[in-house]
Length: 241
Image 1 (cartoon, rainbow, N blue to C red):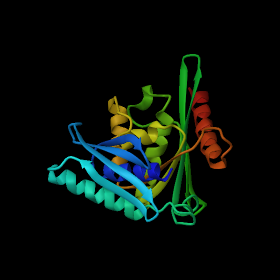
Image 2: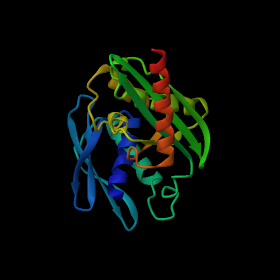
Image 3: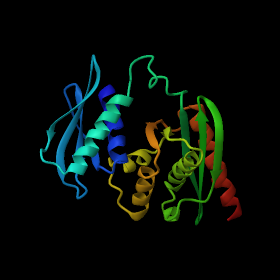
Image 4: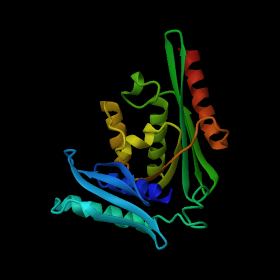
């Protein structure tokens, strides 16, 4: 649904400006995005619509007299989301599956008795051509005990590091574990220091991330590629343990 895509784009822009937000209720022909203060208090909702003239975000449900920094950040996010997003058939966004930079990530873990090994894999494509792939079994600091998601988190952080080092400012990230997007977007509350650190690292990376969820083990070749990289890395680590 276009309204939902617009709402997700708006939440990315808000998160990039350190504005807490979450997906609100669906309304007739629209989708709400709830805006919060740094203390978690609601200041109302933005409503995303998609009409014949394209994307539109209304502010009439926002409280008046908001803090100036918050008001300016909201205005900038709305302008960026509605100006940059075009979901029409044949548009650049519709063709984004092959245009621009795409990151595919996955993680894996293996248990054998009392032993657990994690693995992560990533592949980066530019305009449909693979430009980088990597895998490993070392995980992001603090995630050793979060072995069920450690690989996925590490793959995202490694991929964003590579993009930053190579001057890439905007990417589409394809993933199958929904927390990877929901924590940075504020749709899930990061409840421990490790997921909080992950969400903060993504938001402060300086990279505009378009999150695109895919179904695991669905036969998509690039998802299968990174799944295989992650699994091989976990198996190799377990064999050395």
